[in-house]
Image (tube, rainbow, N blue to C red):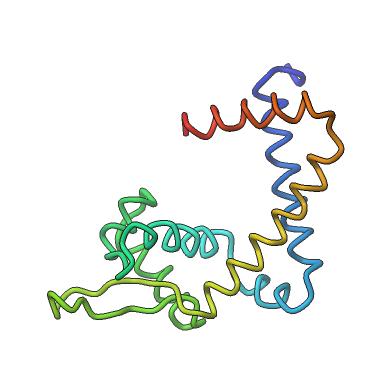
Length: 149
């Protein structure tokens, strides 16, 4: 059972996750900031970044909670912790003063940009070690997995 398809994929995902965290730790200035951000907080920031591509004025707490499949109270705590760290900000909705929208701060965007550079660099190194045909097959399979998720 240890060599089953799910076990191979699970092991690969786990090792990739560890490698990405190690790579992030090796990045000078960003590593001290990154260590102060939990995985869940990082996921929250990444999701806010992705959602604000479609909604540049920001997302509501309700929209963020729905996207994360978490209770609004849980997401509210995550957002509050990230606001205190100056990674996210709450902005008043110009159309409805009672509504608040959540966006990344410049500081939060800088952190995400640095993390993306770090991960991209690691991915390039990993992919460079594969023959072209295997690289194309693997990336195609990963794209299909991503679509199903």
